[in-house]
Length: 182
Image (spheres, one colour):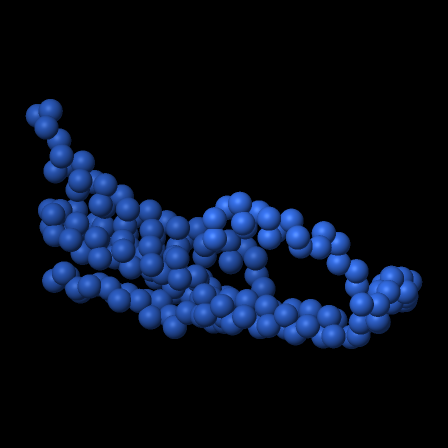
């Protein structure tokens, strides 16, 4: 068929189509009718289930993040070091971040002690021995009186001093080794 015949056939088609029946009364009644009631409890139960799931998941992740087995691995570089787990009285242990920092410093300390002269090494070891003996004594006193805030404060300061001595030994040997103004 060519375009003229197709156009002529299209003009013969009806331009309006009337429905078989009058649909307006049904449409009007559907508009005026009240909406069906949704169940009120279903969304509440869904929200409650979501809250329980969220709380359970966050509690589980928190437990896994906080759980600490208390083990610290300190490599041995030829020197025998007396390693004690850091505690706070008989019932509390210091956090994993302190233990990790202490383990790093202990491993560096073994290497740094080898660089010192025998007299300097003996002085450092004696200082660390005094500090660690004080830590043991304070912990023993805290076992008897765990709520003593003065002892707790002194213990924290002693732990910090222990870390500072280990840091200073590393800084001391690095500054001696890197001097080039001689």
